[in-house]
Image (cartoon, rainbow, N blue to C red; front, top):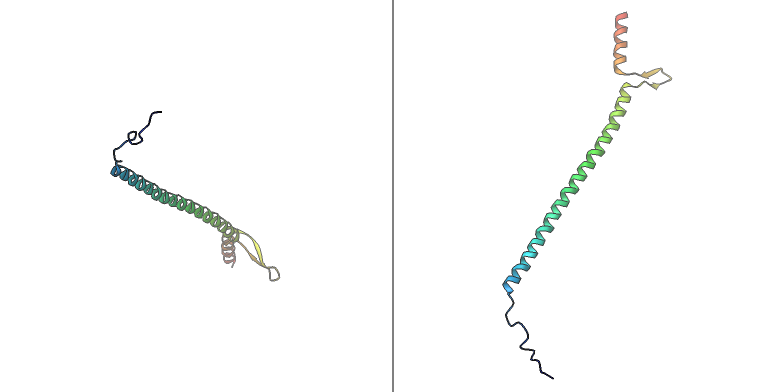
Length: 104
């Protein structure tokens, strides 16, 4: 049986520790840049989505308010039925007042 010398069968050169260190540093810096970019991108997307939701909710609420106000301004309704007080649209009321003054 032949005797194998373990010392003779391996690479005896030193590893390029500077190159390895720079590669690891580059990977860490690149990873940090990707994480920071992803964070700010995510914040921007979330902020834009929240703004869109707020605008949509505001516009829906505003439409409801305007609809209610239009109904209140242009609708006819009893204020006090016992005293015969009726709420009428302002345009109609102004015409009624003008007609009453013309009769006098």
